[in-house]
Image 1 (spheres, one colour):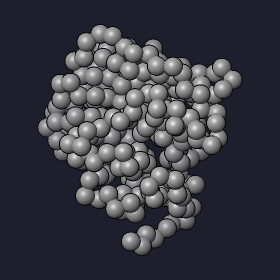
Image 2: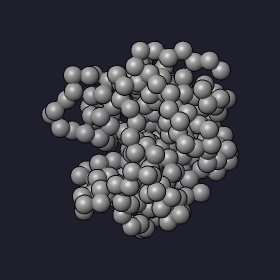
Image 3: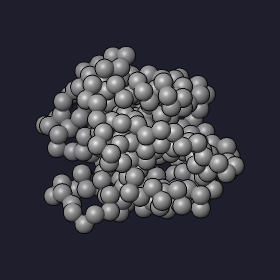
Length: 243
């Protein structure tokens, strides 16, 4: 399938089963956050899923290499990024399994019934600093003014069936806020780990939470991600029980 590239767009090889991704240097490009989360998410073949904030669509594309999930409905607020995600779904021939919805995920009830999904996942904007880029697309992708942490967790709760799973990656500096809001929203953390940069600095927290789950969390070892070869992904896959 021929895809017309716009100014600033380039096609990259994801080095995974022939999958490709189009990124636009003028927008927000995905980082290792998305790759780590995609490798941590566990899906069954019949799972119906929602992604909150798909960006360029890289996580659903990567998940397609892991499992034959039933459907992913990927919300993206920004029109430019939603159009890019649609291209990435098409270039990887996933249009029958992945649907991009260009809307605020808090409007989910215009599309779906409550508690209709097995899995919700998100690599949301989590920065709160006053510094902002002159690029509004990057600002919206990085800063949480359009999706505060409480709205993120409450929306995930509303979308999930009882016993459904919510996977999220967030800044480690806000781990306490995230865990507090998850518990307040009856999303019980069950597995979690932190990433560090190899110099002892903790960067991210990644959590699997279960709607209505019992208390008790398995805290996995920190994942060191300074390896430029991507070997840390193999560590994640072998030691973090990814299926």
